[in-house]
Image (cartoon, rainbow, N blue to C red):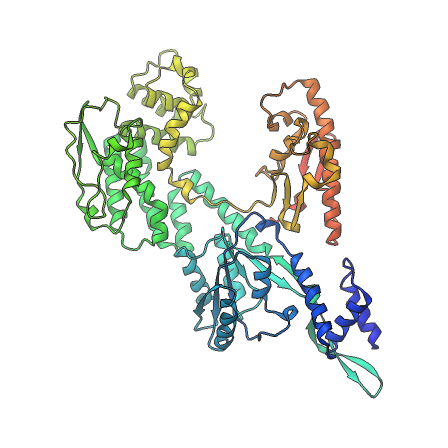
Length: 624
């Protein structure tokens, strides 16, 4: 093979990029191990810097990445930047990284020390983790412990698995799948190494390869992301349905024994018997037993304690007082509090007290009720002389019945016709002295918001309209501290998203600012800063979590974010037509152009079914 043929092979790797004849010649010299003068080394470095500057991941564009986890291989640090290790490539892209965890073996310990010294010159905090055995379990356990202790989390941490130990890829894949960590890989194309044969003045191809540095690209590993989406979807569904045993099993499987214990005990509290008995005193006895188990459990990590302390403080306030009469609260003492490892700043107890004892009380007034002693929780306070209490000040009973309804509303989908739910609705209405005569249809339609008005505001069925959203939200804000599920819900990565008029398609690493696209100009107002009314449904359409969702001529106004605009059938048809020609068709053209830049041929991003008069997003654009 002659020299020019090898050069042609190198040029063929850069079909979408333009380099000069001189630059290709330098690449050829590098590949053939011919000596490069200093100027040629500088040119390669400059070309490399430009290439690295182009690397980005749409999934991370609105995240702040502070921590990187990777492995140390046996590869040496080389003086040329264009030959630098993947860790240093990542630092050029993720410029806010402050901490790097590096896993190393005895064989790679020298390289770890060498890399650490160089990283410290960049003010990077390097934490080394020695791996005794090159096994999946050893590597997995090491990085899993970092996640359990809260040292790394999916919001600001990435895994770089380009280099490392033999089994590291599987271990990182497993943890990324379980916990939603973003995993990246630096990919470089290779060409065979050629040996020069002086006898016939030609190059002979060997069985070994050599990397072409300027082909470097940053890749998102999609498979673990796909698996984590499935895992988080199942976890969130279990939380929404209050299937706490399922949640407990999930955390047990991924090594969070303390969270698993927490939800195991929560499942024992929220049993069908406790919820359906309509005996609020029995339920709060169960709450006391639950808190005792949690407060005496010795193995909670600090990270978990921080996540659950508001929930525990709220429950503690609920069981800490008994109302003797309409003007007297008596505080209870719990011996197990003194033996607990938990610590709450006083502000947490104040906040819960304000919500649950007197929503309109001033913070300073509530300090006479709730104090802490010896950095623990509550000391006994005589409150019999306080005259400010009203009859409905301590909402234990009301909160219990709200929890009953919330529990069954989360589990029963057909809420209007389900006889079991209707029975409990009527039982609770009777508990609050509401007349049921001749009101079956109204009772069937009662929502959870309606019951907030009835339970907490003592509202009659005829007066439900008198209370607005702010009244309901006041109670919801108070009760939100009891919603432990929201704390543990996970936010799966959005495969396709339109945020601040920037379209992201993770599968193809596409990120497009629609404000900068000429084809979308007519979809925006004259200032070019806001979508026109007819174009607004595109936001909720693209951001729908249902990948089979159809935007039709009939439901398009439901996704119009302009609530004040008058909506008529004539306007609907006109808007639907404009939506297609001024939004969908230009958007398809823009996405198609971005795909072709990447050498990808695909069908249209948004499909239109003329028979159904409906738009759907092409399923090929999803990772799953």
